Length: 138
Image (cartoon, rainbow, N blue to C red; front, side, top):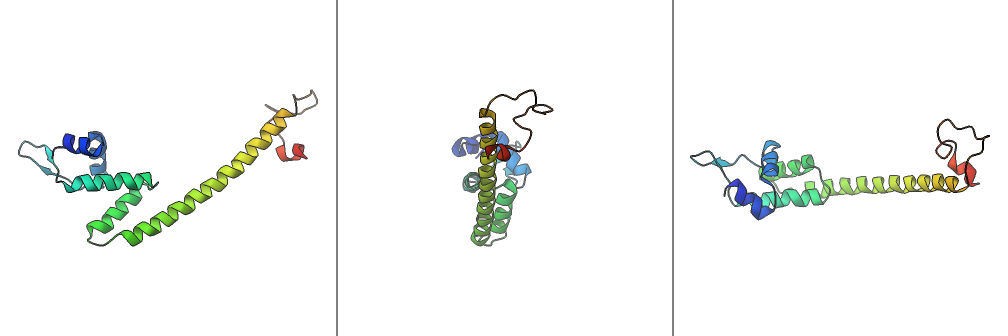
């Protein structure tokens, strides 16, 4: 299959396919006598796997590691399980950080709702962001 056919079947741009080749996610394809890329049908499954990995939040480096295990002839499912556990831990950490940020932003907005600053407020730029929003909530 030529690159355009692969792109159409997998709903992936030709630019992305070339990028994946350069990044080592796809093996270099055979070339026709006129120099065009000539992909085998297995490339479709590989591209779909890459997209599924990305949809699961994996980086291209993580997907490449999984494919490297597979290309060695080993079953990568144990490695995939480990990578997914690590990714889930990262997501849970990000969620905790977002919840903390949400609380901080709400405290700042609550502080802002208390009214305009007076001439006695000693702020350098904006009284809403200066000072401790938790202190004014008490």
